[in-house]
Image (cartoon, rainbow, N blue to C red; front, top):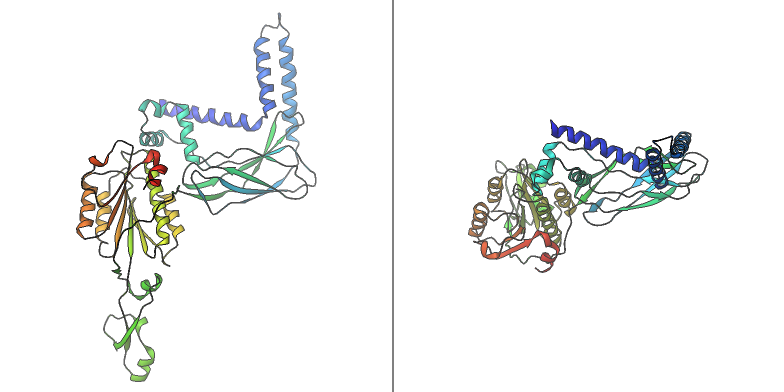
Length: 443
């Protein structure tokens, strides 16, 4: 009960702070400070005349508020967002404001807001547990509550001054840096118009909801020198065509029960009066699997985000190879997405990695079963892990037993050394997620 009460008070204070920050100019905040000081010093009206200053300032503030109500400004907004953003890199876009009245306006400001949902206590607990914060800091700290809101929002967009707005449309450039991957939702925007005194601003809402996807941070990597043999891919001629390997016609033969109809050679049927099908050579090509460990019960948020960044960087490197890439991970079920050589475009995998979430449930056995079921199709495996326990070591052993090249990228917090990691495969990379850029550059 106390926790719910605290969260309600946090929301009230936060909304009031935003209201004060957006509604009053810098001069207005100074004006209010002087007015409060005059009220405090003028409590004793018999021995001080300071209360008269308070009354005078209060009247001016009331007139400023009333003046802001008389406003005929009407605007139309149009955002031009890029297709994607990237965590930690500048996100630039433009906003076009159209004045629907014939009167010019100046001293305007554009306020952009990203959607934010107020968390309950359970959400705060999960967030700060994954950040390895103490229990005392999780539930009662207003600063920690605001930190969660900032993370969930995905970034902070600074207020932007609008040039003089005439009859023609005005375009302003906005810059900010996304702080997390995933979907960013642009909520209701405002244009702030000050009153004649420059103290109070009226906010004109511009409802134009839009969203944009922020991709995980990627790092430059050298291509992996994993030797992988071409494997036969079950799936028929259509799959072979989709990856760029044209099927080679071998011969004609009599129709057998179960042959697909699209293989029937109709000219031969018209000539001989019996079904004859075309026979093709089986297709073989290189296929690599990229495994992402999503088990985050004992991992910090930054560690999982680093793992996703490594997976995204590896997927980017694979774009240069003439091979298929299977991205595999476990969420509420086992997922496998294939990209490369015409099956799908690489940005599709980046979009998936931008939305993948960690799991508190250790379902690595489920992932292991899915991987082993595809051993016959894959030429090599790349694993991005956050633990090096017996289950993960056993998976690497099983893959190596099939004579398949395996590379492991193990993310840790600096407490591990290579000597503490038994049963290492030939390609084993130990990465400290707290210094990921330098660790990857040194590979």
